Image (tube, rainbow, N blue to C red):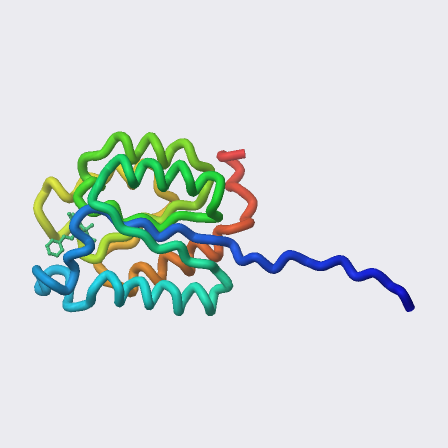
Length: 163
Ligand code: CA2
């Protein structure tokens, strides 16, 4: 009688799913490389997978490098993990590498295409230098697998050498 119950917070961990330049064109051009699905289709798959994994999905796209840097900095305070397809900035951006290096969050780098079967300039990734893991060549499924990886990594004790 008269017992007090503490209300437990049930906020889900948020994962930022960040997409870089030209990914808004998916489904419009280059279907041979990227398939016929749109970015909206990928977002829907992420939201559905997020629901089953118990993750809130914050899905964004920008064509601007500085905006991606701002979002990665925002994620440090607002997210439990990052899934990042930086588009062509993957291969050029030290600014993204520096922003990612400043987070302690799990970061999964995703590419729709297998960048290692493509032009040589796509074989190098600055993002990979700060990523926890990399998934490429599996199309939209790669985003779902990345969310599974983040779900597993959230709350995990850091590896011994990182402590
Ligand atoms: O395979 C990926 O996901 C990429 O990150 C996609 C980037 C590319 O620069 C990376 O090397 C690999 C390209 C983004 C999408 O570009 C489009 C261009 C025209 C039509 C549709 C998409």
